[in-house]
Figure (tube, one colour):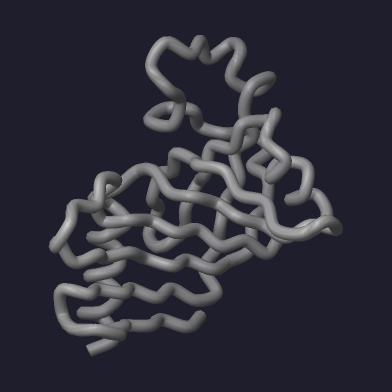
Length: 140
């Protein structure tokens, strides 16, 4: 059963490539949309250097990423989302392929973005289409 849940969560992660990354800082919570790439159940997230999240990651490596199944919810359509909690560490030598927005020169990538690798501590998959409160959880 655990492998079925793990594969369902991995498939959900693979089907998307954008989520909202949040971190708590001295003055509250901070969040920003990020692009991500999946490696197993770990994520490499592209964080804009101008975002407050990038600064607060230096003080607190605990993060939460929320990933909607569809970026455009529609009336009457059940929501499905993944809550991914983990620990983020900057990637010293990032692989930019598949992360950068179109038209961003790789030569400028390091000045514009920070790549953080996020290792999961807990992943919850919530699917209203399977009933209210339907949740599958993996703890690491």
